[in-house]
Amino acid sequence: MEKEPIITIDNLIFSYVREEDREPVNAVDGVSLQIEEGSFTAILGKNGSGKSTLAKNLNGLLLPTEGAVYVAGYDTRSEEHVWDVRQTAGMVFQNPDNQLVSAIVEDDVAFGPENLGIDPDEIRRRVDKSLEAVNMGKFRKKPPHLLSGGQKQRIAIAGVVAMKPKCIIFDEPTAMLDPKGRQEIMEIIRELHEEGITILLITHFMEEAAEAERVVVMHEGKVLLDGTPAEVFSQRELIQSVNLDIPLAVELAAHLREKGIDVPKNIISTEEMVEFLCQYR
Image (cartoon, rainbow, N blue to C red):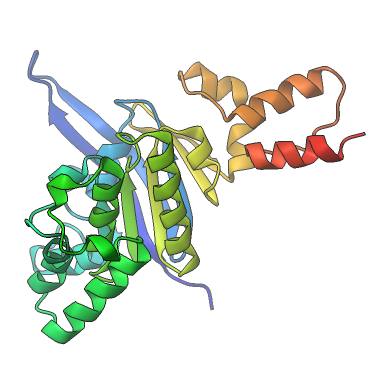
């Protein structure tokens, strides 16, 4: 039997009023998507494309102006189900400082489960397991403000994981990190997906999006492209027309094809390109 989607977005419109001219603007403009349970979807777009506004509509931080969003069957507009929605779809933000609330790491990770009324013994187990999952167990007694940006982001992720959501929405979680920090967070995201958690990754890094099973490109509040990474990144001219880059491997593959080298269409990552070039004769 086919699974029900964990998130259904039905003709979603989210509007706000511009301060300078008091004109209404649709930050998200008629978006309809279904997110399958256990999937890994990346949502791409430049600043102002609507991708972060869309993300905040997926766990009830923002509510639709028109249309609807359903999370595990719960309407995000329903006040009585707000915690059901947020327990199902956890969210990790770009700036971890906005998500850390306690003076000690393990207390911060315990904060979410405590607010859900979880039994203290179960909270302890969840905190231990979540900190282990992000390789931060030895920092459990540290104050978060003494940690690096990447370490803080790991603690923010642990706090969400401790609530045992079926889905985690990452809203540009690596934007404020150095390359090493970005790599570490992406490794955690991959591991969470392998454990069966549904992943939605909002990003502007093409190499991160290339790791997803599905890529959605947004532009001016609408869905511009939706498909596998290979399908989406093959639309080079369209992607570049909205001022987005494409993965380096895809760009290199296009230049090699122009030189007469038959590079497979499904090569989108640097690792795949290196493997192809090593085997090429």
